[in-house]
Length: 251
Image 1 (cartoon, rainbow, N blue to C red):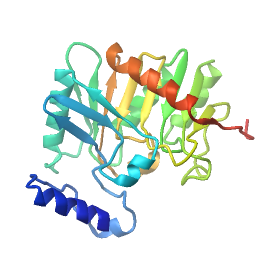
Image 2: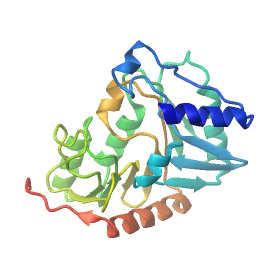
Image 3: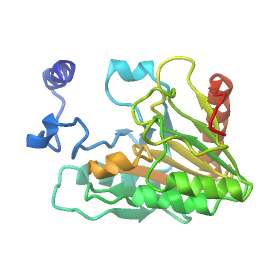
Image 4: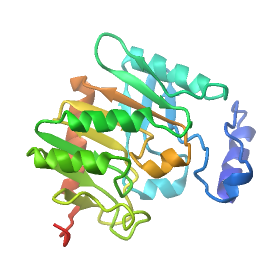
């Protein structure tokens, strides 16, 4: 908290217009995650940076990424989501389609459900050839069942996850027969789902049921645009090539 306070002080001294959403309440002392705005949206001019990085030095010691997106329709929608973050009256999950295709921005409002997680599970259920997943360390919220069903259908499933000892892995073990890689050091903080190397979901959501229970606010992008998905596929391949394949005992 002290480092956060110092960062906020520096921002104010730099005369940056600063708005703090979801001010800590009584329950915040029980968990840092309860009711927080977990979205990470950075727009510089007409360029969007979308992914998992927080404004924290410790985050740069984790395996993570931000995707650079210049599609004007996507950028404008995320600008709208950013502006909406100051309004606390909306409590339904919502989505906005971008342009001419199935590309859409998915927003969780912290109401105890998750449109993003439901959409991810639906895409996994429709997978035919491959599922590649990057998350903080465990799989929950129905994704485990969906992934196991995909494996039974013959779909190749790979995950880049945090080490086995990370929080939650014992409670939510990864699906059996899923090929798992982990960072050589540190943890995975990336949030990415790629289906059949054609559809990607990226943004702030960890695909983690616990954060749904904690009522966090999230924003993610679903897209099949090749110029966005292909670099993410390449990034995933490069990341697992530099990671460590886990020798599992539960398969």
